[in-house]
Image (cartoon, rainbow, N blue to C red; front, side, top):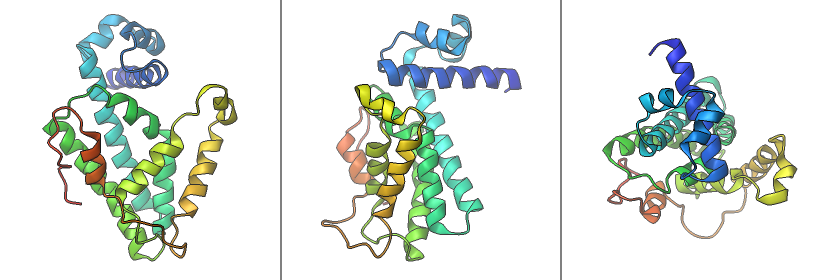
Length: 215
């Protein structure tokens, strides 16, 4: 893809993510066009309908999460720091809000399952490395980590959003949550939550209940 075409695509995806987070996945596509600063034809040439745009957003987010996990693994010698770096990168990508909103209307097919499997494998490697190093509690499953990140990093409602206007509060609270996952902290009740359990509970349209990867 040419550099100018890629920049245009990036503007559309970033604008669509913002609009859908603010107004829901049924927001007018004209709002996306205005936010991206492109013409309607530019959007529809790349994304012929709403589902194509939402699908592109999800696959793009999954790819960027996988890239963030791999970069953290390669550039951090300490497994816990690598995991922490990924969690904060995921918050900057607005994973907690975007995934929940975008999956409201998306049918999951083999393409998306494959994309998700790559991301899951990359993040799981960070979790397992930190556990092997004795830095992360053994009773933490990948599902625990993902849902914790989703809960903590979702935007605050109403006037509370002003508390995190500069985006620093979410990172402070993520660090507080991660501190509770460190090895040596008293184990909590119950068994680790696997990512396959999260996917099964979500019951996305078109999905059969398998994650596409082994837990």
